[in-house]
Figure (cartoon, one colour):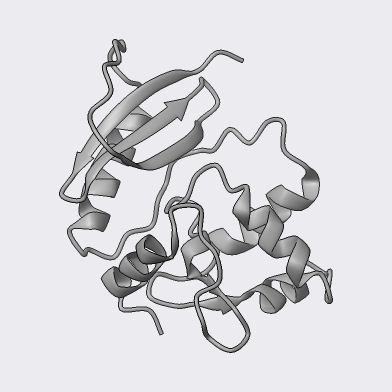
Length: 156
């Protein structure tokens, strides 16, 4: 399926969105400098997502409403991401809690691997998943970004 790209400017920098007719395919941040991309006018769901991202980075509680295009990923990965998407703003959950929620207790490491392949961080809030002891664990944008996002949400 063909993808288009769109840039969103937030106070922390640029976010690159890739999307198809089905929904958001990926979200990449931080983009170090504004890439040169020629793109047609984005569809309404991307315009709405841009507003939601700007609200989020302004510290406003946000639930992202866009559809996701997760074609090409495994059923397990999608199941993990759906569970992560249910973690409320300002809250955290452990890798093992996610494993239990999806009916695979004992698969915390596999949950971590699936979250590491999350194509849409922030929208699928994998930054809200932490280790059992409450320490951060990994994040595709780096631990500093994970910490910043959790602080932005004042996560508990």
